[in-house]
Length: 416
Image (cartoon, rainbow, N blue to C red; front, side):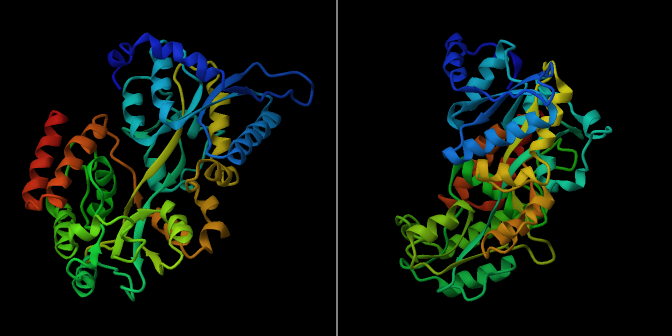
C-alpha cells in the first residue's frame, strides 16, 4: 500500500488501536541474573482460534525470553481486523517491531520502505541456512532478490477425488480428462468441481499454470506471462473438464461431500471437513496433475513474519523471528496458526509424513510456488485473473482469447 494512501487512513482507525492494545499481554521475564536486557519488542500476531493455540504461542515467547533476556509484548488481534489496524499504526509511525504479514503484502510494504531488509542478518554469523526452508515459502519474503523477513507458515492445495468414482487418481492432464469422460453422468455426476470464482479462483489457478509448464510472471517478475505459451494449457484444461461437469450438479449443496463430484482442488482444511461431516464419503487426495512432460506444482498460501524498518532493536527482532521458524519451533507455530511448517526438517515429522492425507500435502509443498512478488499483484489477482477465469468457468468463453486479453490488461496495470 502506497505511503500516501496509508497517510490518508481516517483518524478513527488510529483511535481504534487503543482497543487493540488492550488485548496486549506483557510476557516479559527477568533473565537468570535478575536484570532485564534493554531490548523490548512489540510483537503483533493473529488471535489464535483456540485457547490452546494462544497458550502455546505465549509459552514459546516465554522460552525465547528466558534464553535471551529480551522482553516481548504480545498483541493478539483478530485476523479480519489485523491489516486495518497495522496500516493505521504504520501511518503514524507507531507500528510494532515484529508482526505476522500476509504473503502478498510483503512486496508493497518493502517498496514503501516499511520493512527491514534482513539480508545482512540472514548471511551473518547469526544467520540461517536458506536450504532449511521450502523454496516457495522462502520466495514469499524475497523482493528483488533481498530478504524482508522469514516465512512463518504455509499452505497449499492438492487434488481430492471420490474413490467410488475414480479408482486411480489422475497423474497427468490427459488422465484427468479421460477420467472426466468416464465418470460424467448428465445432471447426475460432475467430473470436476471447478476452482471457485473471483480472487479465490485466481489463487488456485497457478497450481494448474505451473503444472502445465507455464508461469504467472517472467523470471525477473517484470511482466505477467499467464496468457501465453504453456500457461494457456491450464485454461484449456479447465474448459475441457467443465464440459463434463454440469453447473446444476456443481451448484448442489455439499456436492463433493454427497458423492456427486469426482474431483476437486482444495486445501487441508477440507480433510477434517469430509471426515467429520461426511463419514460415508470414500475420498482420497493426490498431487495436482501435470501436463505430460512437466511436473506437478501447486500454489502457496500462508503468512510471513517481518521486522519493521524503524525498530530500535533489529538484532533482537532477528533473533525472535529466527527462533520462531527454526526446525523445532516451526512445528509449534504450525499448530498455533493451523497451517504447515515452512521448515523442511520440521515438516519431516511423523505427524505430516505418516498421515495418508497430510503426507500428500507435505509432498506437494516441495513444489508449491509463491505468489508473484510484485506490488500490483493483489489487484491483478482479484480484478484481472479472477474476473477472467469467471468468463471461462461461468460463461464458457474461449479460454485462450480470455487469458491472452487478461495478460494484456495485467501488463497494462504494471505499466508494461
